[in-house]
Image (cartoon, rainbow, N blue to C red):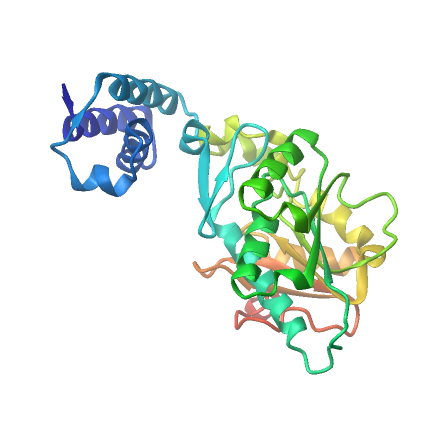
Length: 315
């Protein structure tokens, strides 16, 4: 019978040779998945026996990972903002850096709910999650607000151009018991006509330059290109969203847009070009890299939450 430590060594060596950036971690996660235990149990018990069926599942998983398939797709789950999401080829795998978008949105919701001028009978805050994909951002936000007993104070419309992605998002919403607070719609960014504008727009849209796609890790080739390709400058889809913000945002509304780490200055220039006079503040993620662009109408003050400098202040 195989031993945990031996399988880990063999799997790690195989993945290192195949070019995995994190061969040991990948092997631990895949062995834990194959055995049906938490990764900590694998790390703590290197001398534990592994049954033949589990060893066979592990070998097959290592083969798939060595071929480049993401660990998240092999396991079928990805942890994000303290929650486990079902993931597969229908949508982009949630990234840790996107948690900054959820945190910024949560802060903005709480700021609005605790504002001294908010009426006691005020309607719920309307939020749009544009390009929802697996639903990770919207679901994580609602779950976080639920822990603060504030989830009943918001309504969320989650849109995506892919019906397959929306199906996955619905599955995740049901799994986390928030489906009653989310409405899903197949749409290219927003509905054709926005009859009731949103106080908060969230968007993790494609922002990778088209010519940079070939240089991404092999694992990204298994993900939908539609969710990655942001056009020649990486900002083509974001520019289209900016064009529609006047009809989509309330007068005091703000849009929170995830951007690439090298797009801090570019997004400010784009906002100035597409929406002259509008404000744009760029906030960093935990690594100190530009991550969330907060866009609002002329005279507004987006980005009041957080201490990070705007990209214009860094220039």
